Image (cartoon, rainbow, N blue to C red; front, side, top):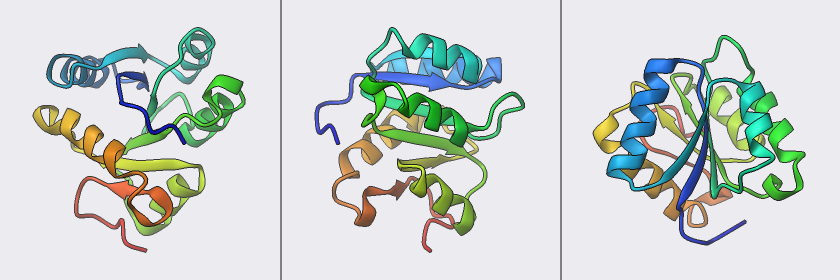
Amino acid sequence: MNLSELNSILYVEDNPQLRCVTKMALEVIGRFQVRDCDSSRSGLMDAADVFPDLILLDVASSEHDSLMTLARLRRLPHLRDTPAMFITGLAAAADVAQYAAAGAVGIIAKPLEPLRLASQVRQLWASRQQLPGGFGCTASMACQE
């Protein structure tokens, strides 16, 4: 797993309003470089040309299965070991176990708080090697199994 500094994010979200707010929060507050994609398909196409430090996927999508999208992104050699996080409102223990099994380093719970989002991402990024199994959550939800 890459222990470098977090600078760039590949973000897949089909909701245009949420995508815009999230991207703005990550870029303006977090000073990240964000490549945002409006679908799994565009994420996969854009991924061929970008080398992000982090993959950020929204779980609740009308167009894609985020776990399948991550699996497809992992087939690209340069993204095979790129850390991934999910944004989700689905935080039951069984859901969290699925994200961890897919190789995610953490989840960010909805509803998103734009002013806290960049710090949540940084917190998960920094703690990914310190947590058992390398997995973390940014809210007090069913992250305990």
